[in-house]
Image (cartoon, rainbow, N blue to C red; front, side):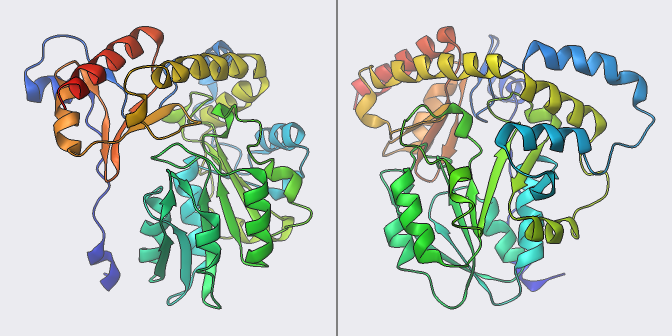
Length: 352
């Protein structure tokens, strides 16, 4: 076994509603708001497409994901050759790390961000260099000051998970200039939820900065978390390298079909974004707004001096949240769910 694997813990997914009901002896319904899933579900077109595709389960999927790549290429006005498909962004992050990193290399990212960046750096026996967040967003100026000759791969999460805040176009452009030719991964898993007008148009920066690797997913706003489809868009040359570490048939036929259908229904995606924005604003208009970090995602990060206490308190209201090192992360749910969550948070902080 690789010696460095002893540093790693096995990923602990949040417990399901049924597991917690059994463990805590709760009889009523519980709201699973711990994994940033799209509470509205996928487009109805996805369900129809999947039903029509069930008769082909005996066939291997298209290893190239040709039709989905064509759809993504058309949507973003990029070449098909620049697209890498993965079984969720987790696999994409693994493939990029495996292709680029060598023992002794440095990765550069911020503290309190998506754990898989650091996880795979450890597996590849690399050094992890971090800068602190700034109000829940990546501090790109502080990050740029930590670039050295040993920096091999830079990970940016925008908006950041688990905090929800984002950096803007001018901040990103300035950072990319300082990064030079170092590969910079822009993890934009929650981009479809963003309503801020100054959120970066990362695709417009590709010509000037060919070292950009843009990550997107169908797991969040498109509502396909269980089907695992993520993708990277980078230069044609780099994408060819990523494919050398890709497993054949890594994305299932049903997943490919579902993603194709979801991408076509942009009207539904717009409705999801608007509904989420309305419900997100309710949190910031409530009496607990000053306990929340700014968010452009489908979750809020609640700041508290006792993370476990708040998490346990929410469970008594049937609310399954996600405790993190920097606070309790709560998915923005339906209007009915959010009424319960906001009331519970107001009750909790009224005693503090």
